[in-house]
Image (cartoon, rainbow, N blue to C red; front, top):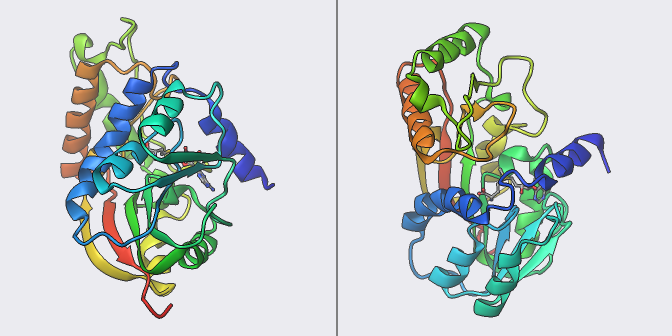
Amino acid sequence: MDERLKQEIEYWSVDQFDGDLKARHTLNLRHWDAIAPMLVHPLPPGPFCVVGCGHGGIEQKVAQVCGRGVYAVDIIEPKPRPPLWDTFEKEWPIGYYPGVDAQRSLPFEGYGAVFCAMVVHHFPDLEGFAATCLRHLAPGGWLVLHEYVGLPGLHASEKRYRLAQRLWCSLPIKYRLREDGTEQEHVRVVPDGEAEGYEAVRSDEIRPVLLGAGFEVVAERFSAPLTGYRTIVWGEHGIRRLNPDVDRVVDALESILMASGVLNGEVWTAVLRKPSEA
Ligand SMILES: C[S@@+](CC[C@H](N)C(=O)[O-])C[C@H]1O[C@@H](n2cnc3c(N)ncnc32)[C@H](O)[C@@H]1O
């Protein structure tokens, strides 16, 4: 296994919510809210797959709303096993498949749809992923995406980075407190040259590679990252223990930075179709 994939597994295996699965789900369901209006009817037949479900994501909504059996896959095996997984499995037909590298293969052939929320921008091998989806989808099946397709590495120049910090530090202290009452001293906009290997690896190539591989656009929409992907990332504590008020302020700050051009990037929400003859 290559070094980058090892790092990815290590990074996502950490429980960033200290076992607070409710917080994790609230975050993930924001992606579902963006995707749901794009699902035109009739839905394609066959079971669905949710790629990169992590500690539990939109798979329950997909199962519930679409009325389908769902294969939920991820490269990581969360430890301890999220207790909600067992509830989901009882309530809805969801099977969890940890340890699956979606760039290589998926656990079934003939899916009606494959869903990806904030996952594909982590893949170095976009061509491998496109081929995997084409192989595992039924003819006419969908690839549904909600993905960051902006700059690779979420780059921000040093000047932009400093500006974001100044804006953050100018906010009243009450908007900078974490849930445990400690101060969040800075926001972290990944500066040029310091981008983590696992974020926005080839994000700007996602759309061209998938369309080049033969997928057809059924519906698509571009939006600012604030609705789906947080360009301003929390500092050394990652995204754990967000104070909901602070979370809203960060959203607002992010939109100001976006509108003023300090940050840039786009989220692509799309329903693509595998051609019937492919
Ligand atoms: C940003 S999180 C998104 C989690 C969830 N879908 C959400 O919307 O919040 C990215 C997820 O992709 C998973 N992932 C990364 N590389 C993968 C791969 N090659 N195959 C399957 N899953 C992968 C990570 O383990 C992680 O759970």
